[in-house]
Image (tube, rainbow, N blue to C red; front, side):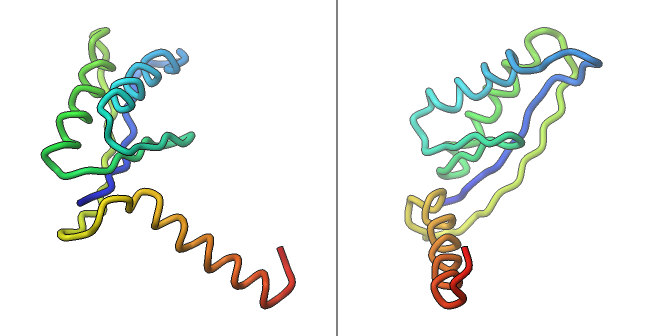
Amino acid sequence: MAVFAFSVAPMTAGESVADQVAEAVRIVRESGLPNRTTSMFTEIEGTWDEVMPVIQRATDSVARGGHRVSLVIKADIRPGAAAGQIDSKIARVEERLAEDESETGHS
């Protein structure tokens, strides 16, 4: 199992890229794989063989307008890991922070 974070956008000067990015995110969401979009990256969880075609389709959708495309991919590949890493990694950090807050009285 793996969690991938990727960012894809057309390399155009001075134009909003929201429409192209929205189409890429739509493709990820329609894949049915666990995913989350933030202001900088879209995270998607699955096997290499499940995720890479989704990233490719998202990239192809951005390139459709004949644009040069910027693509950044980062992956946490953990053979044998259970599904749900996309959420459990964050949950573990939040638990630690809650423990710290209860010990120090700070929030």
